[in-house]
Length: 227
Image (cartoon, rainbow, N blue to C red; front, top):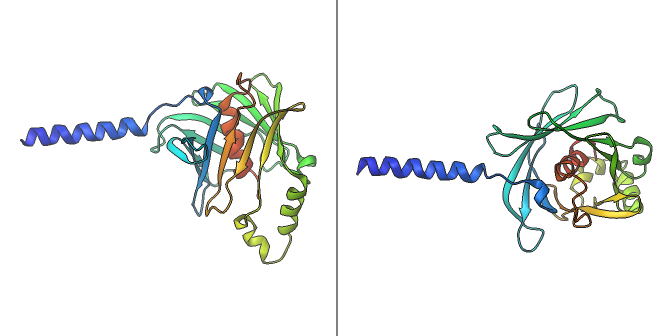
């Protein structure tokens, strides 16, 4: 009997471990849910595949943590909550440079692509360029609505309110474009205690943009700028 109990306990632990390390290849999907975890010190996020309604998160397949007290930004993506299997990472090339280009690499160090904030355009409307592994621009991510972008910036200058502006239900939506073709969207869930977003790349059915690069820019647009 004791041996049966030990065996059953081991089987349960093995099953739970298997569930927590379930492998999901982002390049097989077009839609993701990004949710920020509430932390006082470092930014942490989770990616899920959506449930049937398209916006409710299913099981988590990626865990993200921003390294603290780093002179260069360093954000790691893991396939497991214990952070033992790295999926990809974002790392800045320069220190404290608003025009810095960030390298996106796989867990084995293989280059996936690059992301870069377009500093001048972002003064009015946050804009990012996305590059593939060879340095070719593959997409542009920009705030969807200029008027809302300007209003969001204006709120940030109002005394007292600026400290709580991130908590206000102001849309923070992006579109991904190549030339004038819309490839996808990145939409904030309204009236949430913590930030949550739906990323939909169904406008790129051939998946010409590496979905790991999409995961990287989705986190970067929240973590790499003070909103």
